Image (tube, rainbow, N blue to C red; front, top):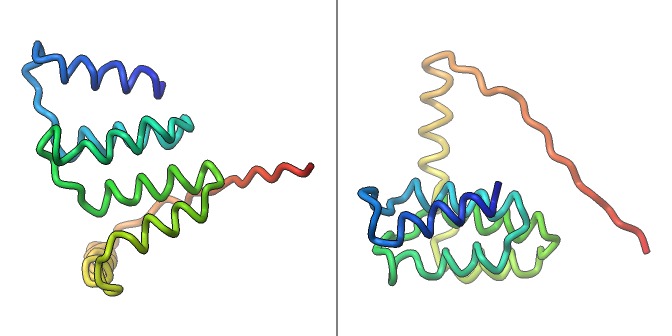
Length: 122
């Protein structure tokens, strides 16, 4: 439903909507673009987020972009995107450690997931 996500976003952007764009709006939109291979559209939304919509990109948005590029087999572009961010190498680790500790302290369980890689030969 990637096309539907973009359609709803455009509806929100039309000025007739009472809803405003926020961090979660763009996470959902970029994730939809990622899952449906809409790379050009996803990158366009990402690069317009702050300037056009006033939403500052955060780690979750960047993860969506890396996921999108990775799913499309554009690993070089994903690497260049990551290295172009310019964040310190430790960025995110403190938060990840804190989150893991919180999960363990509250005896929460993470459901297992799986990944699929499609390898085309020829």
